[in-house]
Image (cartoon, rainbow, N blue to C red; front, side):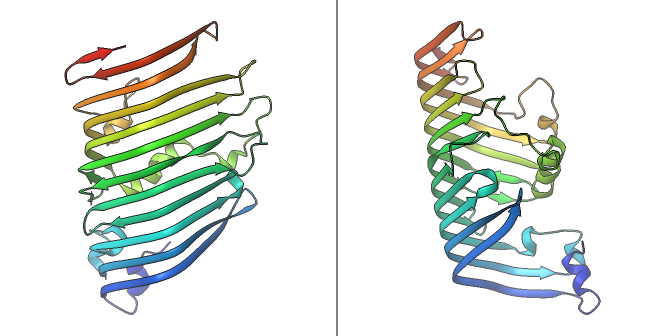
Length: 277
């Protein structure tokens, strides 16, 4: 496909706009997936793009959306993903590259039907907050905080699981190629997830099995993900300086369900270092 500059170059040398704005708009977006029509709706959308510029240098030194910075602020977001059997809603979504802020409040996701041959999730996340956000062919952030995620995941039985169309599968190579278009690395100085509850129900087992974890807290400093860390084998796909975590009410199975393992409390830290069970 042609780039913006290739489209304008037969007529114009450049296009420069100080401010592009869209205020108090309602928006609906539809597309097809697996022969189903999926939709996204926003009750209110505000968009501002500053110093938009397309010229010959845009191809050499591209800027995100050809702007110096932009603001995307939406409320009442809802997605009906019929092809994926899920509904997603978000109370407030705010991305401000001028101030380096990204906030998402009250994320809810539910299956449209539990009578399905595919895996499904149900849960909510109170908030996702990013501060000191900078995009420069990669993602730099001073803080990433995920507050109170509650996730229930149900894994369908392999006997009942619906066969996936090969054309719908996304390979690791495809995912990496997509991410490389957006950023070449991700660096976060301080990352935390607080008060998470996770529940996993495996219907694939002969007798079925449930695994759970409550009040999970995680914190790490100087997290780095790039091409080098992703390509490593038999190691974690990220680097870090220190990290710690804690959780309660761990309930799982060991050795093909011959043993059940339960743990009331656990605390681990690489900084102290400390391990308490």
